[in-house]
Image 1 (cartoon, one colour):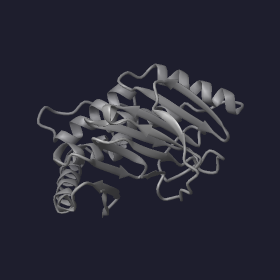
Image 2 (cartoon, rainbow, N blue to C red; image 1 turned 90 degrees about the horizontal axis):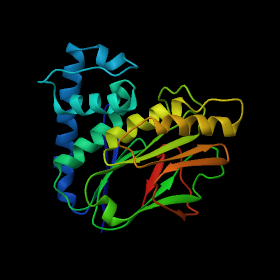
Image 3 (cartoon, rainbow, N blue to C red; image 1 turned 90 degrees about the vertical axis):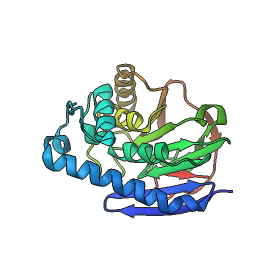
Length: 244
């Protein structure tokens, strides 16, 4: 059985699903502590917040800043491109539940001992709500990330045109940063060129398993992605992913 709770702390908006509701209080503490660590670090290092390029952090930087800096370096983007995935990952790392899913604005970190289907939201594309990704328990028994960037949905800065770029990786921080980088590259004179440019960018990023790109009603796939399943499930704006 899954227990569900939405945890909102400033910009962080996490839908947490866990196998024991006693974890909810601890989860809020973990999120708050990591936000405070990150906010205090940014006060001392404001470039961390504004840079669109990778930056180095000090040896004594908080763990979340180090995680974001590594993700930014791998994807060649600024560290804040990974903030949602990093907060979700820090939560999963520090919460000892066997089955847990943290969805932070469409960026997911998961650890589970059962199969999980994650439904896709891709804006006005006909694909929205029609398909999902079946994550096998063997793949997600340890921390796993499923993160999406969109040029047409949400408030995040994007320089591309894709409706959705979903990245699968063993780190949600890395998946988040990679999704941003790949979505930024989804530019071109037509849908196919946008997808091809995005997939070429994906080739340059290490430590990701696969990529699923949606531009209007066309898709492109690179690497190994989970099994696609039909969901026929309505998904509303505000949750780029529905987890069930």
